[in-house]
Image (tube, rainbow, N blue to C red; front, side):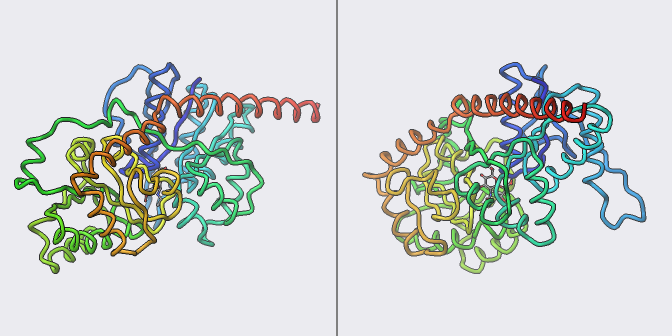
Length: 386
Ligand code: GMT
């Protein structure tokens, strides 16, 4: 198939999933065309089957806000026409689903039919999408998509709860490439961070409020008094400065390191003993799955789709959002030497259930079904008109 993938190219779950999916589809022979405003962060190699089309957004002094959605729709129209795509798969509803709808209408006026699949990732529904400023457009464009997927049962339910959606939503969970995300021998790295055999706690995210990174700092402040440990905070975003100040105020800078955005995140995860994700909500928790694949157990909140990933008492523990003392108790339990290796094994076993090899065929058969159904409905419409 010739597939167009539209996503956010920056660090962030939806862009990572879209890019990894595109790479995997290309590896099994599909032609994949990425349409984004800059090179996706994980698209840093050459493949015969991967193409990159940059959305050009011309500016003009009249625009206080450059009309990105119009530029994106125009790019989609051009790529579908020039590359003769079979399908457009857009990741994150805002504004990709509505831009795709417009592109579809423009193409239809030129006698070209293109099916659209929208994948919902989380904040496009749970935070931003349900804002009144976006809700009518989101509802309309989800209903107009030829196929809709969500990354967890939780997100499917949330979508039906928040929006009047008539469309069937297919749950296809996120996945992991186990050939990349696996525990590597990085003893020198561990020794540099934990020279006295301390345990290592890690968090990776885009440092947004929804991640509740302050809970990690408060939790770590107690854990380190019970078990010698260090904390690595990986990623960057709006909360980072405040969290750094908090660590300074709590006199934690000797034990906490901020690493910023990292490409080779699997190298850091390879030396971690515990991954912490206390989010307010999380539709799936891809960063936690990446940690599990590197044999790292989890301390997470029980919000959103996290119970679909983290098995209580097996791959780690879940606590109510903001319950710092429960997270401390559970972290100390996991980090005991007699428990740690069992949790690590369980984390890896669970990650294997989300192996790319299991999930990719689900996307491929969904693509085939949507393309066939949308072709049939087009033929029905043409018959009625004829
Ligand atoms: O978590 C974020 O703020 C990034 C966001 C995104 O769209 O990039 O992540 C969402 O999509 C990921 C991939 O499907 C999920 O693993 C994350 O759980 C989800 N984030 C939230 O629901 C907060």
